[in-house]
Structure formats: structure tokens, C-alpha cells
Amino acid sequence: MKSPCVALSLLLSFLAGACADDRLVLVSASYGKNVIAICEANGDVIWRLGTPGPDKGHAGHHDVHLLPNGNILYHDSWTLTKEVTLGKKVVWEYDSKTRNGNEGKGVDVHAFARLANGQTMIAESGVGRIIHVDAPGLIQKQIALGEGGRGKTRLVRVLDNGHYLACAESPGVVTEYDSEGKIVWEYPVNARVYGAIRLRNGNTLIGTGSGNSVIEVNPAKEVVWDITKIVPSTDIKLAWMATIQELPNGNFAVGNCHAGEGQPQIFEISRDKKVVWEFDEWDLVGNGLACWEILDASQTAMVREKLKAGS
Image 1 (spheres, rainbow, N blue to C red):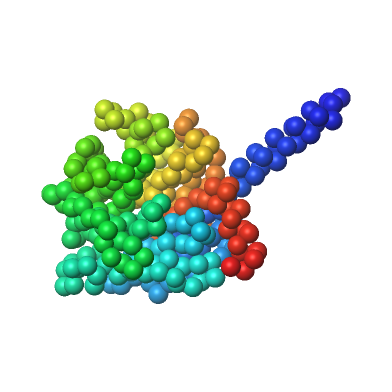
Image 2: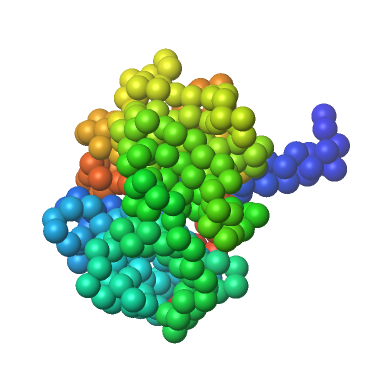
């Protein structure tokens, strides 16, 4: 029989593990669904925001973030980036179509992020620049994106070192720019690449878009891990590989956009290529879930508390 202290220790370890595994899923879907929602891991919706839908009848939801204050940074058109509270009040917005010299120019936005200093990074595709804007919408920094189609981005992420990791569908390349806009690393994907992140081990994980694969590339540009076309030992077929995320447990969360009904829109896969969780909510997000975010335990706890308080 275990001593009371050992039993208590085991119980606390179990509860800590259960808490660490608690997750919510933030999704943002267009293609006629036009919804932002927060779901339980099993797909149950606990918060929902309808959006007007994208212009030109095409996908307008390409990025979404839960902010440290519990608000959501999102967009529902090609140019308008917004911050909304869980009480569904828009508290900030920036329209790239009309601000800071873009009047009359062809511009669309596929990526953005709130920075630690409170400014917002926005990748303005078409005009080919990354800008940092303050709360009033004044540019505090801007860098030019590279030539040869590199200014037409999909996802762009700010790295811990202040560099930018940017994906360009054509010419199908992942480019790392330093803080001044100089190209310091690049990996050609030879597909309409959508998303890339820098992993904790220093490698780069890439969702290859039309390449129907997810690849992990080391700094020497060698592929050290991949899934292609179909996940081994499953019926999961890889379609438009978009958003990807490294989870606290070391697994990868993979977005499988345009895969069709009966296929998960997101799944979690271990390094030994075992699928341990699937998110398949066709009625909610349909066939166009390009952007989402799995919330960690602390984010999940914050959201639950805010929703309970009605904020």
C-alpha cells in the first residue's frame, strides 16, 4: 500500500498532467462559413463570432491569434485587421487598403501578429512590405520584402531573434529576413508554400501548401522529417497544407485545408508519425479552414475564466 505522501504526489502529478493536456482550439474559417470560433478539443463550440465574409467571394481568413489579454486578432477581408474582445467588441482595427501610402495600390494581407511592445506586425502582400504599426496606426518600422514574387506572401512569423520567416506561394520559397530586411536564409519548396515556423530545436517546419506535405528542414537545408501525400498507417490524405504549430509536448499540429469531407481539418502527430488527436468539424468550418491556433493550458484557462466572467 502506498503511503499517503506518495499517493498525494501521484494524484498531483496526474492533475498537473490533465491540466497541461487541457486545450481549446481557435478557428477562423471563410469559404462560405465566415466564422471565428473557440472549440473544445472534441469540437464543441464555446464561443462564436460571425464575420461579414471575404470580398470577391474568396477566402479572407488566413491568420488568427489569441492575444495575451484574451482578445482575438483576426481579419475578415483582404485588408482589414481587427482586434475583438470575447465580449465581441472591436477595440482596434487597421485598414491596409487606405493607410500609409497604400491608396490606389493593390494590397492584401495574409499575416499579422501583435508584438511584445504593443505594436502590430502586418505583412502587406502585393506592395511587398512588412510594417509595424502602433495603436493609432502610424508606421514605426517597415522593411521591403524580396523580389521575384517574394513580396506576395502567405504566412509570416516574427522569430525570437527579431527576424521574419515569410512564405511566398510564387516562387514557392520560405525566406528568413533579418530585422533590416536582408535575406539570411532561404529554402525553395517548389510548391505554393503556405506556412512555416521555426522549431525549438532550430529547424524549420514547413506546410508546403500545394505540395501536400509537411517537412522539417535543418539550417543546412536537409529534410530531416516529413509526411507526404498520406499519413502512414492512417486514411488521412494530405491536401493544402497550411497552418502548422509545435505543441508543448513536442508533437506537431497540422492543418489539412481543402482535404474534403471525412478528413480532419487539423490533426496532431508525434515525431514517430502517430496521429494522437483529430479535429474534424465539417459543419462548422467546412473545406476552407486555413488558419487556427491550438491554445495551451494557460491560454485555455484564461479563456475559460473570461467566458465565465462574461468578458
